[in-house]
Image (cartoon, rainbow, N blue to C red; front, side, top):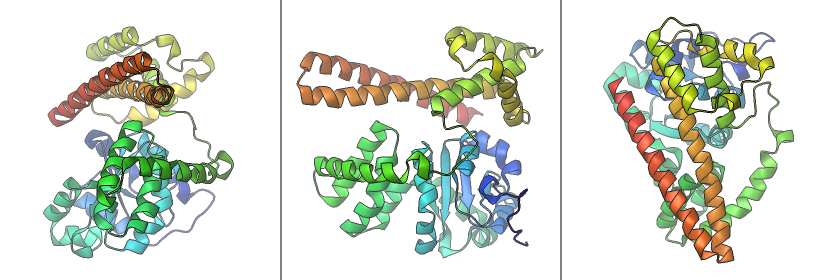
Length: 344
């Protein structure tokens, strides 16, 4: 393999090696495996790990992540034991977490590259992928010094968009460090201030892709899908579209007249190779519903924190009831989603 240099046409910050071959499988398996080199991708695909991709001699960029996020919210990064190299990818992990992507780490057996590990025994690599751990859990287990944990783990927690997930990892970190959770909350406030400076818009990479919230992107994607397939002869697909249109407020699904052509083009681009359009539409609608609940939970969580400080007990109880009800609803949708993935 000859590493092609960057050119005007070949922009490495916008291209993922193997993405065209991996796209359908990434969507089907609902996770993407990121390896370091092109040969790792080739060997992975030959061995059946066809949801594998790589960057091409550049760090993981916001453009890469948004390509991945169109297909899945789950990213598994291969770790071959080279701690320095892995830490060099920190910026990409930061961006992934801030984009709401769940990042996991799969440790490559025997400290080899994925290509070498697969060549020796593909089953061992399959087990490593199945055992992949959340990036924060990986570092909590991997690091032993308190200072290292504070410097590495806490910034990752700050970047998590979900308040529920933040609370979970704060609890786990407090256990590891044998300190109170309140101490970590206070430390996170300081880190958040620093990260706001690092991630403010003027310092972020300039991209043409949308900076819209995920909820809005999902609404537009669903709208584009329905507009694209509105004249389909597939009876089951038509019935599913009718069900979704009744369930959601069709007028708010990003359906501005001047955007119709763009939305349809986007849907056709990303779903034209899908094996089952009805199934893809159902998944998309489910993702939208889950994202709406997550957004609502975030708002309620902020409200609960404010009410705890103000001492308004009745309003606090009402907010807690809403929070638990929505959490239960989200949990049910996640269970339903997992069952569907196993069936398919």
